[in-house]
Length: 72
Image (cartoon, rainbow, N blue to C red; front, side, top):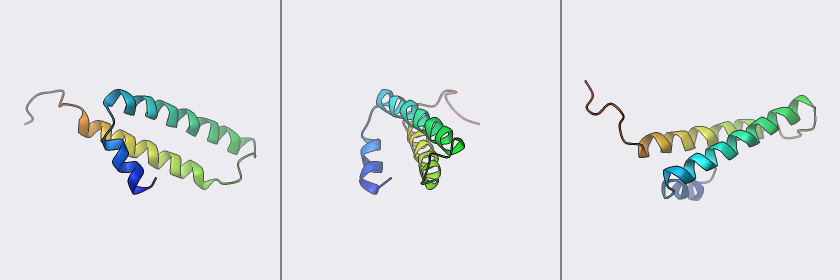
């Protein structure tokens, strides 16, 4: 994911991020399926998709308000 794409993620709402997360997880599932069926040529794409999912989850955590109120 390029820097421009990462910055674009920060501008999205939580609903848009959750939708993109669901789409990325579905793509990861299909990539893993293709790998098991020996259809996938670029196995690095699985690693890249996992990294993209982690980046989306990180931005979601930053944008969500704290659930427990004040910490310890």
